[in-house]
Amino acid sequence: MEQRILGKTSRNVSTVGLGTWQLGAGWGSVTEEDALAVLEASVDAGVTFFDTADVYGDGRSEQFIGRFLHSNPDLGITVATKMGRRVDQVPENYTLANFREWADRSRRNLQQDTLDLVQLHCPPTAVYSNSEVYDALDTLVSEGVVRNYGVSVERTDEALEAIKRGNTATVQIILNAFRLKPLDEVLPAAKEAGVGIIARVPLASGLLSGKYTTETTFPENDHRNYNRTGAAFDVGETFSGVDFATGVKAAQEFGRLVPDGVTTAQAALAWVIAQDGVSSVIPGARSASQARANAEAGSVSLDGSVFDGVRDIYDRYFREAIHPRW
Image 1 (cartoon, rainbow, N blue to C red):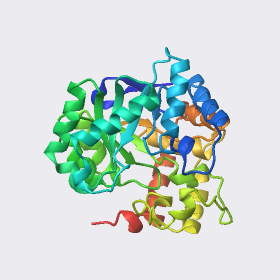
Image 2 (cartoon, rainbow, N blue to C red):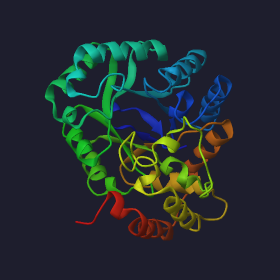
Image 3 (cartoon, helix red, strand yellow):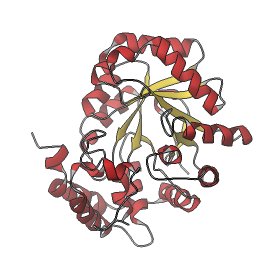
């Protein structure tokens, strides 16, 4: 699989990584056996980048990764984790003392002395412009607690603020064929600054898997059930800001753009990989077969008609919901 430099980390990572929220919680239940099988299948398929967070299953996702890498110490995997969602979401909680506590917990879970990459996990907007926050993160680097730091954002203005900071190594942002706003300013700014882009929610919470119908339901503890309107996270994070039936209709249209021999999900991932400035895309997988299929997207090429079709679908179904024209 193609490897790209992950921003200012100077580390090579696979264009298709693995998002591991689902190994902890929030997408229904995943057994320990299945979680470890997903990690193994991903690595076997060429994945060299795992993304996790300290709140995914209250550390369960990190612990699975730590256990797997402890048993396979020579794989050369880069692990990015996230911190900040374990406390009330007020700027005052983003302090050096808390950063040390959260990072130490992640180090124990991941069985790592030094964390490869720590990202602030969608903190309050004011945090991104607070110089003391970046000073605290620089301190963690100087102490050898973390090698690099970045941010995970909900909004493009948050990404642009973080990119201005000289030691921000990466920005993780929602980017998929149904959410194009980051293409306007964020990706160009990141590329100019040498900041890596980690593309999350690349399948629009599963819409772009091509498997959903208007009759599809989700478990009660699955965020696609309780966050359809954006009550729990940012509006548009789940199903790109439109009602589920509209999202399914748009996904069906996307499916008609997909070339023969390629799944809808693989085409959606390949579309993200093709965007200038993207370092890695991090789809989740709940089974080894899903992990292998996702990794195969790294070798998929799309012709221009797919990119034109994506823009047309976006303009007709999604733009007014999350990205009005100006």
